[in-house]
Image 1 (spheres, rainbow, N blue to C red):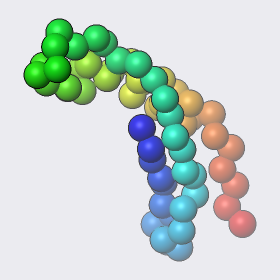
Image 2 (cartoon, rainbow, N blue to C red):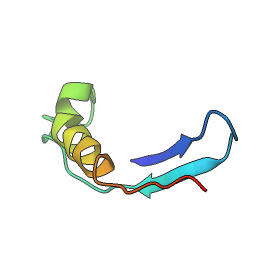
Image 3 (cartoon, one colour):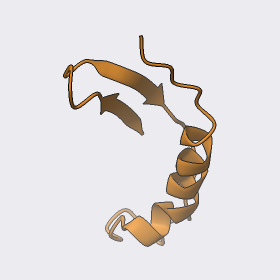
Image 4 (cartoon, rainbow, N blue to C red):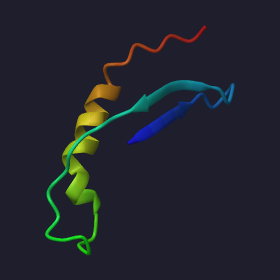
Length: 57
């Protein structure tokens, strides 16, 4: 995942992040990739985001 949080007032990036993770294994290459497949990766990224110390200047 790559993400960027933008300050709504200044329209400037506050946080940029790249997160590597592994979701559930798909049955085959035609199996759909869903949010449920990546749920643990998303949850881990959300937990990490709460640990950022962002101070506005």
